[in-house]
Amino acid sequence: METNDAAAEFRPSEITQESVEAALKNDKGSDARLVSFTVQECTKKGDNYATLVARVIVNYTICETDHKASYVIKYNPRSFKAFEKFACVMFRKETLFYQYLVHEIQSQLQEAGQTPLRVPRCFHASLKEYQEVVFLEDFRPRGFRMFDRKKGMDVAHTKLVLEELARLHAASYLLKAKIPDLADKYPVLNLDWLNYADDARDVLYKTFSKQMDTVKDMLNKVGGYEVAENWLSRNKGRVLEILDIISKRVPSFDVLCHGDSWNNNMLFRYNEKEVPVEVMLLDLQMCRQTSLATDLTYLFHTSLEGHVRKTNLDTFLDTYFSAFLGVTEAGKTAVPFSRQELRQEYKNHLEYGLLLALMVTVVVICEGDINKEDREGFSNSVRDVLDGLVSTSPILRPRFLCMFDEMMENGIIQ
Image (cartoon, rainbow, N blue to C red; front, side, top):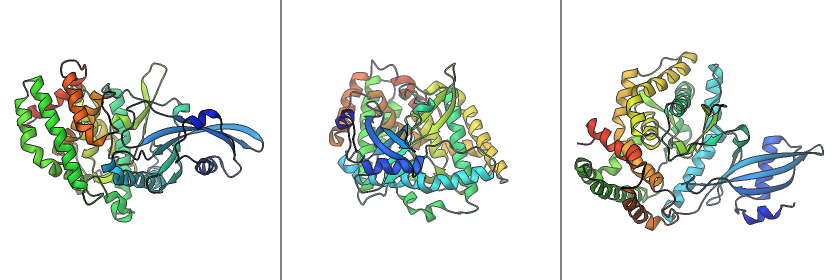
């Protein structure tokens, strides 16, 4: 087996000849013979937070005819000491999704005459602890690309995402007729950042409460946000209570959720006029059984500018409801909630969306200037960078400060 010099320059130990051969044969068949492969760093700085991603370019033969293929590989970064155990759980969840859950979902959509859920195919996975690796379909040859996460998604992008999330949620609801509780059949779905280890809640509390202090100080420097500052001070002790909402399963809204539904975890394909026409959902490492509203409020508060979210909220929820209804009607099952009940469930989860945005959106705003490799110094790094961006960042107000304005207007922060 030979590889070229470029491969030697970047070769994570998790990406072995054996794993590449396994992925190739699962994709192209047992007649495929691996000739060589190279490994490339797949994403730019800041693209990934919980896992690392590479691309493998494979040269192979079938019946002595030369071919080329490529795969996207996710592997364990083995960084952030406090979250090493959680990273292992995330790989278990994502592997579960690609090896089992997606087939359950696709079967429901197929039976209902619907198009398949738009997610990558998985060709190989290994769950060797702290050396986890997953080989996935590469969408780059099909013209898919990432959205610029520093730009809030517009209406067209958001509607595509909502329709696909609704199809995932609705198909899992149809699945209840065969599997009443996915979390009972697949217990790893019950694991989350709140319970993955004995000290999980303590680690999470310290992380979020420190971030709330950082944001409070930032708001103080901006000025005019005293109400929000007071809310952050009063509710710092409620961090775990707010996050616990993801484990509260309301029967009418209880579905399989993406769990990490922000625009960094999606790819889009565009037409010749650069209009988005198709979306692929990626990074299912946080999938869980809970209220569908957690995916919606997470998406809206981490991935949209305030004016887009505020002026189109009813339209967005209607888009989601119609897509959900389309799947359930095709599956000859009544939709379990009304449009008004969906709006109320969304509102019930606004604090959750706010808390997640305190982490995700701040990191996006500070991107490129913070040291994500040092978990101990992470919060201090965010604080230092954010101080310098208060008066200079062009996205601070449309992506972040506007969220506090809306929360105060809606009585969530008071």
